[in-house]
Length: 323
Image (cartoon, rainbow, N blue to C red; front, side):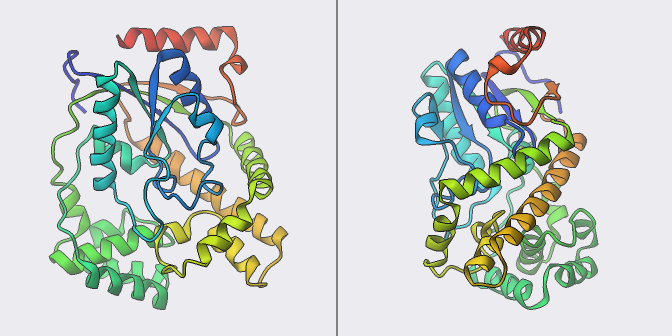
């Protein structure tokens, strides 16, 4: 990542795994700095999933400007390319208002689409997408991954055999273009014309596990079951990203009478914990910005007051140096 010219406008990234406290930190910083919060989480864009994706509450949204939360129907899958264009509009609007864009989320691909550029991959089209989803449903992710490895080994090597969403995407790109997704991704366009700095949250694993369990209990109180029931009533394709958001398959199984609520909760905590490990691995191997401050904090963070005086000094000194 090359050092951007200092004359470019500044955007701040607040990143970390699920349940790491990044939304709370982004809000605290937005209030202190006069910032605009821009969602960089691939599931929080769906309007039907406020509770299960832990989107900011109505009260929190009233404390600072929030963009790209709940703006897309679950029936219409998003993409990194779509999000990038929307994020650039939101960032420019914040800058025009004299506010600092604060991009927060845990979807590493979204951040890299901004900071490293993104490939202009042709649209595979509805028929190819439908074929890929059908194969995923019939074969399962592991078998489809094995099939992908035969025709596009470079991309398959980058994907976990259980990651059905990304395997399906890679399969449809190969089917539509005759070239592997990895080939297309190596043809990235230029990075966004912004100067990026980042705060990366890395809570201890045990604190993160506790935070995930606490958050699921809160989601149930806030209406997670009702949210999933309403989503199922839409009759959507179960292969859609929103239908595979953490908690949706598990609570759907409970609503169908297949498992108890306790078992659903156990499975949700397990898959969410596994996902946070993959997120942590991604963040370890990718540079978010040339200027990145890494924090190891308790995942139950809710307010800047929880930082020690020394930590607050480090945090605000880092921000002040950004200019």
